Image (cartoon, rainbow, N blue to C red; front, side):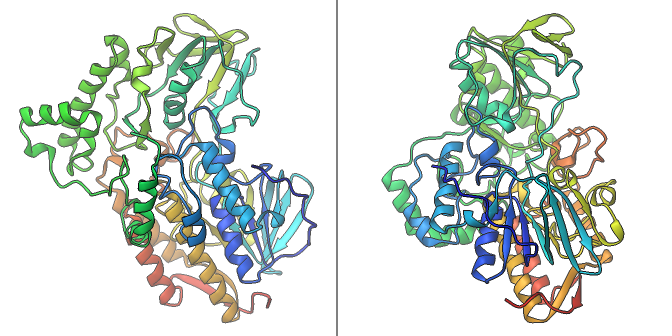
Length: 551
């Protein structure tokens, strides 16, 4: 349950300012408060939650097991909170963070309903000045951006988008009071992760549902189920081991779909005969395409897996034309975000659900009464835009961030984001970015990556204070080396295949430079690198003497 608090009294000066009150911002506040550091958090929403505050569309659910998508830093919280499902839904995740925030009384340092407009570095004061849409001016030597990787929603550039006289809504900005869908003629644009989750739920209540598909997606059954007392007991008995496995793994995940311990595949699909592949498909269904070690890296193996995937789509979807439209043919498995679903393909067998393949019948315009494609007008009461995000960099670029000499971050990143470790940017002293581009972030269990970054930043601030150091930023050469390393590690993978056009590469945003933004080397390897840099006196960073204010 949401707890309403009065807006805290503002101080002109703080030691650290945090932007964002999601899982990252709240853990960072907790760590800094325990150091006695004067901190304020600025949050655009009316409560904590971040992603899980804004994305409350029907069917919104985490794609990581709830027992892992949770804080590890408080064993009391870890043992006291009881998850109801293997894959937690948005309301439950939101309640969980509210529970943690209430337990540690974190709300009193958060400025809700407040959006940061600008963040400018003052070279004389050696600190940051932030302004907000409520007329606030806040100052601090350090600013930490906990703005999230998927928090800058995108609307498509469609003629007439403002002319629709019915209800228009984005999945990523779903109103708290909900949207009346029962018996309505609903159209949804997009078939990414949010839409794949929402479509089966909307179909349960809508009078009709028309799905306007821009690009078909690969999606796998979530196999979600209620968690039993035995499930909870087993994990609690091994939580320390599970957390350690997460921290040293590739993706920060120890449990696979279904809740069993995850084991990386070793069998290769190219070593199987056609008969063996078909037998595996009969036994495992869609999951067969995720069971082989060579599918992510070998294009021929990937092509074979895609054929099996297409066969499974045809088995589920009864109409051959609809099945053909739903089957991805233009990009390999693994180049885009792995999506999980509950009865996504089966939903298209319902008589009131229809698919418009925009590759064949593109949208011409939004009209007052609905959506007109090249072939016809679709009369609608509700249009839902599940059209994604300006990922990784969008939330930062929508703030007027200026570093040394007035350099604008959006201009520095005009040819793609450049930073060191995904944590700091050369020319922008004392500015940290939690799970920024160049870190594992969206390729991992975000909770594991968030905790690693928050802990690293907190330890760094302690080091600066204890050594009388006032400023910190990357060396340009270190930044260049890291960007090159991120690109080199991704080279040759499905993520950067020429046929792949994903938001990992920024290609969903008109005018955005194609660059693979997350770090594919794995959370374990990345953690080790960050720890080594810290142990070597923060090698690759320029540390300026003076002092973080004593507290």
